[in-house]
Length: 288
Picture 1: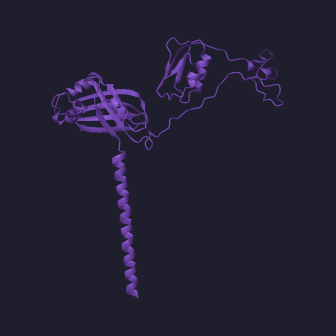
Picture 2 (picture 1 turned 135 degrees about the vertical axis):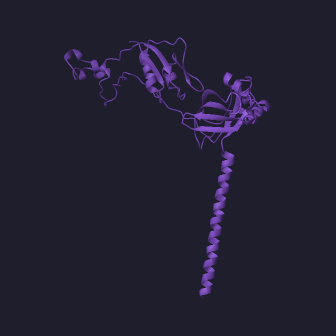
Picture 3 (picture 1 turned 60 degrees about the vertical axis):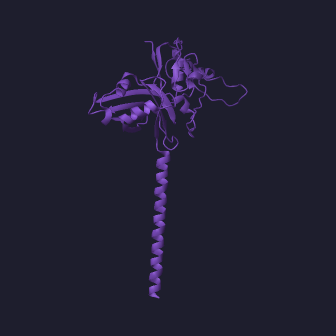
């Protein structure tokens, strides 16, 4: 009887260990597949710009790993050649999903491609995001130059091959604002008494000062002129500013711009647009 119990216990232990090993193997296999399939990928493409042009694509799962990439750096580490180090940097419009670009890295990139003694040199391509994420892709310098020279697909053509992101664009609903409350309908028997509603100006007269200040709470805001208005980095193209003051603001695909020759004498509307901006990137300076 005792021997039978020991045998049953041993069989159960072996089966349990086998199950654990199977689950561990499946977990490792799943992790390996995700690493290989979802790992960010950089592909060097053919540039239409010339020797200073760097065309590339960057693919990653923007749903699982959201990021806003805005800058690329190409660094040469050439300790046994000349020059020993070169860095070419370029910023671009923020990209929050897989993309392909052809950008001009200027003279630095030309010098990088013409560097001497690069048989032992290393190239590192870096992509930087506004969230502090840095993706690095190191490779041998000779291979990098060879890939650039042999590339056959242009960035504009490769863009159409990229899988669309499942990440939905965020839209912000904005409501029309006014500095003076609208008059209440006389048909209603219920009203909200506010100091900035002209119907109740006399009821708030003198509440905060002398008799000569009567009705001051209901006075309209005094307009002003500005000397400069600009957009800081970080615009999310929500269209709020253009809706409020289309004569000044124009929303593009990736950012907002100030229209040339914009009227700067209606400071209240510019201030209203700045206050409506969800990310607070609209800035202006009043005329003293």
